Amino acid sequence: MGKFVCYTCKKEGHVITNCPSVTKENLAIENVTIDVDQNAKYFKETRLMGIWNYVGFVTRADTIIEQCQVGTKASEDNIDDLKKLIGDYSDCFALNLSELGRARDFEMHMELVTNKIVTHRPYGLAYSERVRVQKQIDELKKAGIVEESISDFASPIVVVKKTGEERICV
Image (cartoon, rainbow, N blue to C red; front, side):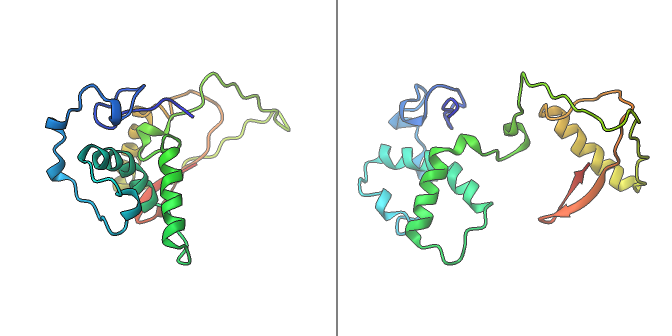
């Protein structure tokens, strides 16, 4: 498991429970909405700090679970167990491109069947599509996922709609 990251100060090495920047006075608990019925087994202790710690910890798991499809036959206990599991390993999930990361210090060698260079011409895109594609490429570059290269090998991209938004595929 990776290093812990505090959801309050965003620094590594600790969680909100022992964050030096959090005190009981600056918790801003009035902005937190909690569905106590759904999460009753977690809220047996009603200490303010305990609830705040739970909310700070689970918010990420809830966000992750909202993006998953959980079977309709799953019981409340199954869903609670899943939330706890996701919460325990929430650092393994990326909620956006900047959290995705990449494998570093890794080299890959590809043996080609022939020495022939594989090049395909790009598919035509309308101007509006090119603008959206360039925006996605810029986001991928900013997140450090892709980088510009000069290569004889080339593959066209295809724009597909997935979950209502357009994505590029190579």
